[in-house]
Every structure is written in structure tokens, then in C-alpha cells.
Length: 515
Image 1: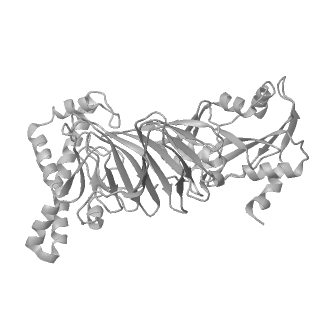
Image 2: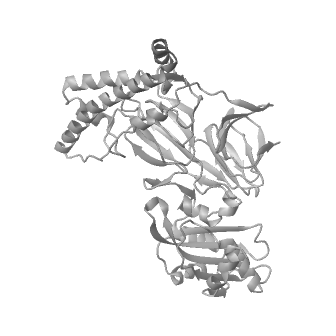
Image 3: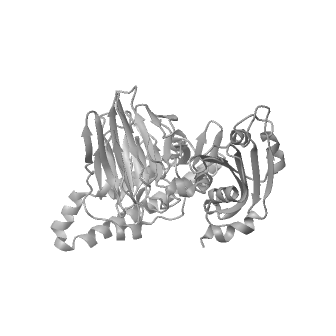
């Protein structure tokens, strides 16, 4: 006996049912059922489809009826200190083909069923769309791509754009023309069909958008113990990098490593890392002096310590600091950075960071990033005040860091034929990412084969066609989640000279492309 069979009967006994002919032109009956689920699961498990099928088994419905199943539930939001939240799920399906056609919407908060069910009685068709529009939420179908739009998260160095991130700082959402739904709730409608057993914390997809100003637009020098990351360079600010070549910090400086090797031989590692750590710690003392003075200046101007300020405001404040302190900070910062390699990057380059790889994206370099969904990092140093924690993690990071010289990865060619190029740009333990290029008039069919796909366009415009024939526009900006249960989808480049898009897939099963 599975979990659903064990729990379904007592839940089912609490149902409220109603059958009516909605609107003036409806011929088939609309059957409505509402169930209140009192349990508060730690995760967003969905019994919706099982309850829909149970309903069909219990009652003798005409073949052409439409069923609406409403669940009122509670759950703990792990991203919001486990706060208990009331939410609703509404499923719409037909009696004749529930396995082929079902969709739903979900919304949060208290709402009286009697208030919104009256809206359905007034419409001639598509009752789910009426309710989705009323609550301003997206309709989710496991057979159609889910559109993900960028959620802007301010950072001291610029901003991140989240597509799949779920944290207290922000929750990504699914969008359509009816409204938007927070991603965990959208996934909770059809977790089996959408994810097929994959972790509900999706591969993290985001953009990093640093300011163009040097230092202010430089990211943390950081390292991860579990997280694996890949960047694809999408823009280089011409004011920051007029030559068209930017630079990132990654790995130990090979010249510094050689110098220590010449001096200490095979025992070079320990003295090098010790000197590196001491150099950062010396810089940290000066950095904190500056931060304290800057906080005092902010307070004098009525700016709170956590308030976001513009680069110009920060520059104006720093200009009020003692000149000797600013010179000392710049000198010590450069001494610390001299231990790290400066790696050139150009538009379209792929940059990968496995766990234990020290790195820092620099100002004016915009990237699309995929990473494993581990919310952890070790801050080695930062040329601004760190707002998310009160300490640096220098000692632990240096003890663990990979001391091998950093090199940009070489993409692996998978397919190259007739204007279609598919390259694997990263093959991490938890996911792969492919870069796909298609010239005009090329149309390709792709298979999910039990794994969800995340798609984001780098350049160009194309049609993303689902199995049902519904078309979404694939262009820079939004991303799309294709359900693991998707048999196939088609991408057609009808207008762009060259289309470039990225596809991330969790590691579980094989995948492929067809003509």
C-alpha cells in the first residue's frame, strides 16, 4: 500500500461536491469538489493527480464532463524560516482524458470557496482561467513550458537576476498572461510530471550583472565547498574593457607559485598559503576601518547601514575618507590580489568553477550562470563591506582551496552539421550544460527523456513549440522550464541569422536531439 492509498480515504471523506452548468452556452456539466487537508508537510508534496483519479473512480461521470478539484492546504516554507502558510490548489481536467490533459493553478492566503466559485458559474468556458485571472496567478500544465522571468536581487557590486532561486532574499516565479506563481508552489502542482524524482531545488539559473566601475563592480573573492558553477560571458562593458577583453580572478598566480617553488622546493604550498592568508588579514584590518568610517558618514547623511546606494554616492563618501587610508587600502588590496591569477575572457567564453576553486568575477562583465543549488560560500576577501555576514572565511577557504593553475575549459563538440552546432560546455557531477547554435531556417526537435530542461537564450529569436503545438518566443530575457515528462519539443530559428541558447539538464538519464 503506497502513501497515497494510506492517506487518501480520510482526506476524501471531508470533501464538498457540487455539479452545475456554468454560463449560458455550456453543454457539458462542470463537477466541482473541494477538500481541506489539515496536515502540514515539511515539503511541498502533491497528491492532486491521485485525488483526481480517485474522484473519477468513485463517481460515474459522463464522458464529456469537466472536473475541478480544489485543495486547501498548509505547508512550511523552508525559505521563510519554516513559516506555516495556507495555500490553495485548483486542478482542471476532463473525464475522458485525464492522463493526457490536466492543468492547475495555485495561490496563497485565506480565501472563501463560496466567494470565488460563484465566478465560475458566470463564465461560459475555461473556468480555471477565470480563477487564475481573479487571483493573478499563472496556469501550470506539465505539458507546456513554464516561463521564468528574471527576479532582480540587489548586491553591493550590482545585481543578480534569479530565474530558479528560492531563498529568504527572494523567490523566483512562473509567469503567464494571467499572473505569476512562486516557483515552489508551481512545481508542487505536478512534482512527479515536472521533476520525475529530481530535487525540488532546481539547478540554479541566474545572471550576474556587475557595475562597470572598477572595485565597486568587483564581486567577492570567494570559494565554494559544494557548489559547482559555470559562467557564459554575455556582455563586456566597453567603458570598463575597451579592448573587448575582460579579466576575471581565478586560481593561484602561477608566477607566484613558481617563485615559492624556487625558494621552498616541494614544500612550497604551506608558506605560500600562509603568506597569502596573512596578506588578506592585514588588508581586512584596513578594510574594516574604512567600513566603520563609511558607516559613520552614511549615518550623518541619514543613510542606514543596509540601504542600497549608488556607485556615485559610494565614491563621494569614499572621497571624504583620509587620503592615506585610501592609499593604504588600495596598496594592500593589490598585494593580496597579486596571489591570484588574472584570466582574460571575451564575449561568449565559458568559465567553470568546480568546488574549492577560488574566483572573483570582475566589474563590467555580465554572465549567465548555472550552479548546483547549494546556498553556501566562503568569502575570502571583499573590497567593500560584506552585508550578509559579519566575518570573512579566509582561514578555512585557504586551507581548502585548489592550488592548481586555472584554465578556461574547452567545450566538447557533440554535433556539428548543416548549420546546427551543439557543444557541451560543462559536465559537472550534478548537471550538464549545452550551448546550441542554429542558423536561420534550422528547426530541431529535442527529447527530455525523463529529465527536466532549463533553456535560456543568449542571442537571436526563435519559436519554442510544445508537443501540443503551442508556441512560445525564445529570446534573451526569460528562461523556460520543460517538464521531465515532456516527450519532445521543437525549436525553430525563423528570423535570426544565428540563434544561440543554453540548455541545462540534471544528471540522471540520457537525452538527445532529433531532426
